[in-house]
Length: 233
Figure 1 (cartoon, one colour):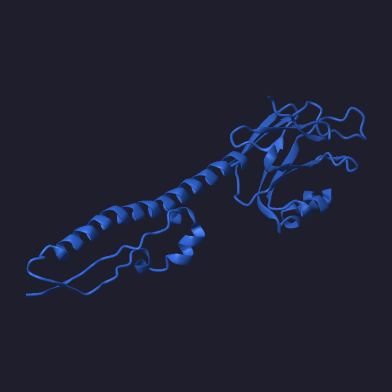
Figure 2 (figure 1 turned 90 degrees about the horizontal axis):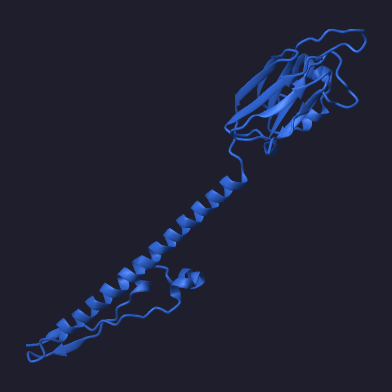
C-alpha cells in the first residue's frame, strides 16, 4: 500500500524585511508571496507511516511561529501610524490657537468723542463695530465714510460676521462673540465724530496671534483714538 507524501518548504523572508518599506511594497504583492509552499511527489510504504505527519507537524510549527509574528509586525505599522497622527495633532494644538469665542473688553475715558472745533465740547458715546474677516486687504483700502455708512456692504467679500456696541464716556462694555472657523482677522472701527484720518487711530486690525482663547483683550477709547492695551504678564 502506498501513500502520497507532501513536503512543505517555507521561503524564509529577509532579516530586515519589516524595516525596509521599499522591499515590503516591491515584494509583497499578494498573500502567496509571503508564505510559499512547494509540493513534491513522494512514495511512502506502510513501514514509513510517519512521513506525512512529520511534514505536517513541521509546517504547523512554522505557521504558529511565522504567521503570528507577521501579523504582529503588520499591526505594528498601523500602531505606529496612529501614534504619529496623534503626535501631529498634539503639536498643532500647541502652536495653533483654537479660538471658539472672541472676547473683547472696551473701556472709555471721560473725555470721549469730543468736537475739536468747539470749546468745552462735551463727551459723547461712541459706536464701535467689530468685523470678522477672512482677509484684511479690502478693509485696509476702505475709507472712514464707507465703513460709517455701510461697512457690511464695503466688506462683503471678506466679511464672516459683525457686531456693534456703544461705549459711553467713562464706561465699559464686554463683547463675547462666536468665532467663525475661517476668521483670520478681526477689524475694529470706532465711529468718532472727528476721527484722526492722518494717524488712522479710529480703527484696528487684530490677528489670531493678538487674541487669547479664554482671556479678553482690552481696547481703550480715548478722545478720538482707539488703542489695544498691552497684555498683563
